[in-house]
Structure formats: structure tokens, C-alpha cells
Image (cartoon, rainbow, N blue to C red; front, side, top):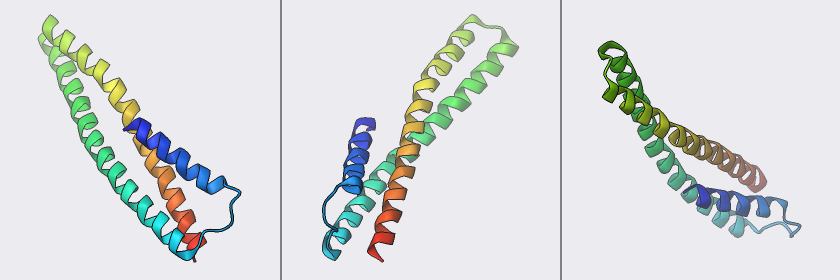
Length: 115
């Protein structure tokens, strides 16, 4: 999903910096509706990753507290595993969040260009 988001952001940036004549009203409407559909897809992905990231964070905290009180080697390993898995989830969510925010900016630009 990260690769798809990066490619779509590059596509939107190329449209934004293109030295082409202004788009017609119909082309702007089509571009904006396409952008809104893509934003919907990425928002859904972002929501799913927020839920998964929050779940892993809660599991990491619960296992860390449990391992602190129970002093069990298995719980130490589980806590380490949750923390190790949490790092890529946070990174991926960060990329999704920033990408969707950039898409909002492009949507606003299309809206102001349209008016």
C-alpha cells in the first residue's frame, strides 16, 4: 500500500507542477472525483492500520506490565516481540497518515482551482 500511495502522490505532484494549459471544468471534476475515491481507499487503509497499531501497543503495554509483575522469561520474550512488531506498524501508519494529509492538500488545491 505504501508503494501505491507514493506513486499516487507522485502522479498528483506531476499534475500540480505540469507546464500544461489549465484543465477544463470537466477534466477538473473527473480528477477531483478520482482523487476523492483514492482518498477513501487510503483512509480505509489508515483506519485499519490505526486499529492494528493501537492493538499492538496495548498488547505491548499489557505484556510489559505482566512481565514486570510475574518475572517470567516467556513474558519478556512476548513483550520484546510486540515491541519489535510495533516499530514497523508505527512507521507504516506514519507514512499513511502523512500521505493522506498530502492528498487533502491536493484536494483543496483542486477545489480552489475549480472555483
